[in-house]
Length: 330
Image 1: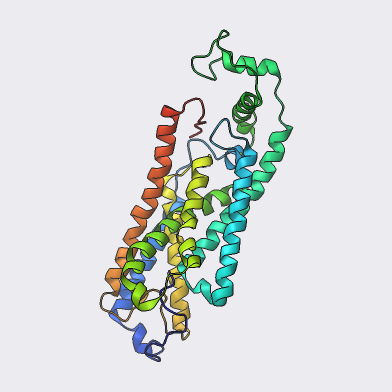
Image 2 (image 1 turned 45 degrees about the vertical axis):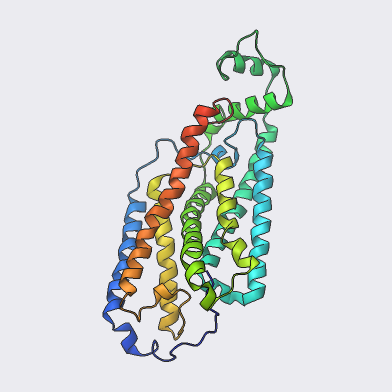
């Protein structure tokens, strides 16, 4: 979302004056920021216990029965390296002032998710490799209804792919119930769900609002910026298509709290003398500031809701159209 040069000149000294923070817009905007933050804390604290606790296997096992967990590990490792390289290029281009923008905050958060996910997937693959299954168990799995329309006369030949399907489903049904996700597992889920809403908000604001209306005046779109405002969502959506992580609607509270932290960060910087806002709609000097703050706060609902609908569609349609391939956990 970098649409102004970091050192752009503005009306120096106006924001440093005490009068800037005594405007009526400041009080209204502060309420718009504080109210969602407080609501997010209350919702997170009073969130109902899930019907099925998050299990360790849900963090690293794919939702596709014929897919070896090593593929998910390889994907997560590749994405972590690719995104880390892109962020490094942006830092080389702008320095650490790049983190003045919400885009880099969100991009770094997605990198944190893939870093944790890669480590947990690696540990899960190690556990999975130790899990063995006897041929008799494979036969019993088919005869007991593990696959629809199978009978002793139509039992497929024993192949490596079939063995992987049986081993993965057996792992889900037997060992997975014994071990719940620990601290890092829940941290991974929290970062995942916060990132989901944040990347949708970042990319929509950039491509729908900033690029069409401000690109010719304030900034020039380059390859790094284009990649950072598209690959973040693409990489996360592909991981969603492969993973088994739940996506409850109430977790939008973490996404809202994340954005409130960023706005608070900007306010602190400007209270200490910074005179340039990275996004025009954050500037408190205009009479339209409360409206902009309210609209941006409201935008969090459809942004998170869109991602929630994508996950819900996956969990609803895949079991119907691919019942033998999709492992439905939640």
